[in-house]
Image 1 (cartoon, one colour):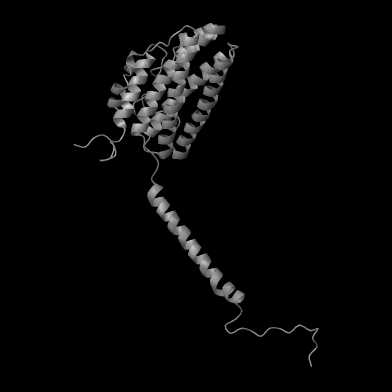
Image 2 (cartoon, rainbow, N blue to C red):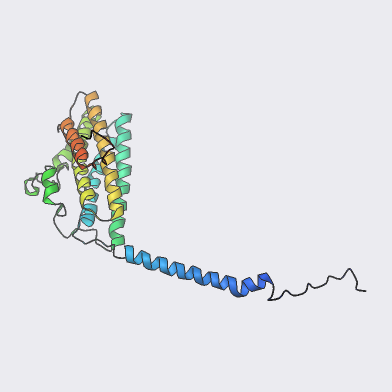
Length: 262
């Protein structure tokens, strides 16, 4: 008799143990399939997205460069008014603009780096915008801009100095007026990017800029009214034109989903 204290080695299973068979055949087969799937996925991704570098003179690169410069002045004006007012509402708005547009500047610079394109422009500002965009948004001719103003909507060196010298409510009103003008031009440029850009990240960011800055334009209009002041532009007419343009761009409803069929 065998000693029951001694464990008996189980009889081998025909074909080997399941775990051994897995080690010998299953695991390597799964690894091979996984590698093949990864290679196929990489190939499909390369075919779909491999040629994603936009041209140096295209809308994506042009928008990134021009809006970066545009944002730089918004950050500058925001930081100036933060030091010249005690009003919490103005300071909060200025901090938001400075933080958000400072972040967006870094983001747009990263785009250019990732695309292997220089951050410095090789053409005139706003040259990437189509004539339809320029006319449709009523941009002034670039040659007619005041001295020291690189793009429509941006403050002149004289206006920056006025903001630097102002304080209290005077600084608040001037900041709100300059930033409203600045935002209107920024929205128009971002809308042109939505219409012309090809890169998903640019399209998404440009639309977010449109939405955010339109909201801030309405806020600044109301803040000016609280100070018995007005924007330098007819903001109401501009907002109405924006709504009309958005309605024109909206897709038509499918038959039978709205209106009356006769």
